[in-house]
Length: 118
Image 1 (cartoon, helix red, strand yellow):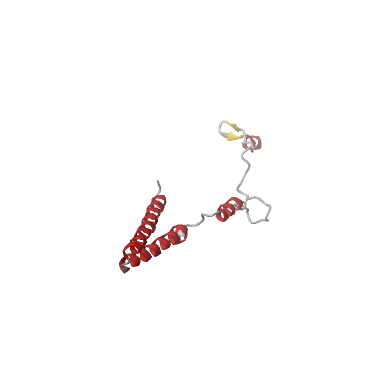
Image 2 (spheres, rainbow, N blue to C red; image 1 turned 90 degrees about the horizontal axis):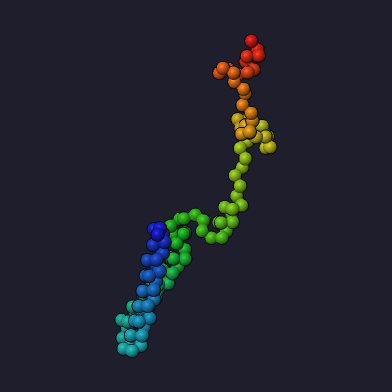
């Protein structure tokens, strides 16, 4: 499990706790009529709401790029530009040779063309 996934699990647990405790304190307020359970219910309700906002916008808070469907579409549509030599937009780099180009024949460690010259 990654650290971010574990962080999401902890935040989700905290949200459930805050909202559950808020509901419990509000029911305590209704039964007893005291103000302290109402203050706690409101405070934990706000805390739960803030944690929900944090969980939804976690990528923004942690400054993690990507995430949504938009980012996946942009990454899928992005194409790497071809390596060009600068001689024109359709000219391949001069150092790039096809892999299937034949190698010169060698005779006794010398190129065949060098032997024909002598």
